[in-house]
Length: 325
Image (cartoon, rainbow, N blue to C red; front, side, top):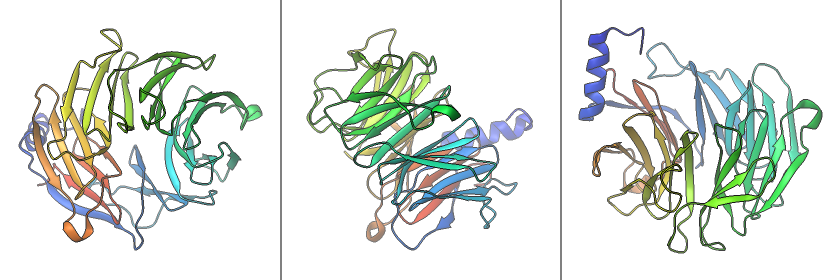
């Protein structure tokens, strides 16, 4: 918000703190979806079935140009997850394949990656990591001459739901189902594929991790089926998180996002509930139910900017506008 006048910045900041916003719907679709999305500049990328569509925001940030900027295809089944990296879209599909799409050209490559659906993918520094229902995580090269070449295959003993590469490019973390292995969070060496450590202890069976993200090379957040968001500092301890927040209605947490400072947003499994948290406090600041009982839906993915929060549900893409409540 550097170019925004100070008075406007203060007003928007107060709106976030007080939960003052205007709700709208940016997109609707007829069939139930499990969408994933990413933001980059003035563009929004969202998966619908086996496509990824790119839309341009209008200047207000609370609406989209209806005609997509681009449509990225290639999967035979639904896109489960995707990331943006190095002017590429790296997508994970229910067909067991990984797709590599150049954003500003028609170049698209897909290759068989796993025996079952690829639930998650990440890409940094020319390296791709993927996790699957087939209980493996794999490391791949994004280099043009080695595209589709598997560098390491890791047996995780569990379905892999989430994955992220460390900003140091030395390791990556997997979030698994916590059914076949006692720890749902494990860190692996990116160069050798060997296990480095696991995070936490005494997780109940089924406490799978559905979303996780690095905030820095030494700190990360995780959330999932056991209804907690956990903040880990690898410098302090790998066995105990330094902070945790519990979803007050005992709902699974599908996704999380942070501004890298005090604000944390989570998406719950029922009634499209988005919660805002101040990470200096234990209790939730505000809750926004985006669906009613007949159309109850999880929040599959959420993203926010300094002025808006975007939440993808089964039938709609919602926006919370904190600039013009």
